[in-house]
Image 1 (cartoon, helix red, strand yellow):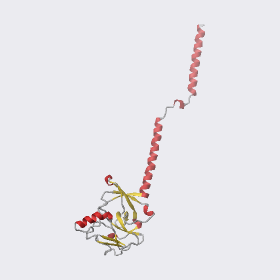
Image 2 (image 1 turned 30 degrees about the vertical axis):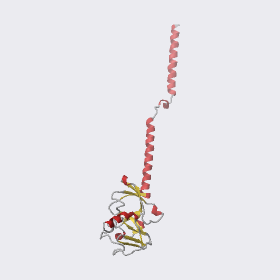
Image 3 (image 1 turned 180 degrees about the horizontal axis):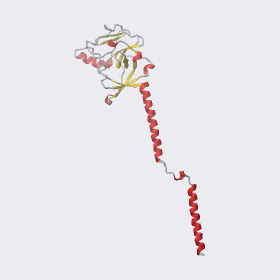
Image 4 (image 1 turned 135 degrees about the vertical axis):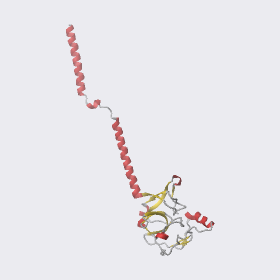
Length: 229
């Protein structure tokens, strides 16, 4: 009897071991596969890389096709613009309309191989005359509000605002034509005593106009929307 009981126990153990082995064989590898937390992180990083890539592409498109940063270099637009200030130039505005009086534009000067920033004084068909501190467009004196304080201060000191002998009036010996031709603009720097502008370089071809300066974005304490009157 004892012998039979032992055999029965062996059979039970054998059956149990067999069932365990069978169960182990039936389990798929996925049942023992640990959760891939690293995989989720990798996917998130990939999504971030894609997002950053798209953002960079959009910035480049905006940078080259719609807007352009420009650094003011030199005193020619004082007192309204200072050296080192950075402005955003709107490159698309003039694809839809022509420049207007008083707008501050950036344009390329082939002879200088660099960009200038000046203010639009005359548009096609305008007759320009500049004598001392008196600016006339179509024989009407222009009230240059953006220079009002600077001109008044110069007059208080007993001098002209445009008082440098090397800065001629207009028309002058070098440029005798007073009417702005089609496809061109006449520009002046705000600092009339120290500006190389249409009095020296002549009318500016619209094909060389890059766009209108709309915002000063640096330095931070100078951030402002640029006035054009």
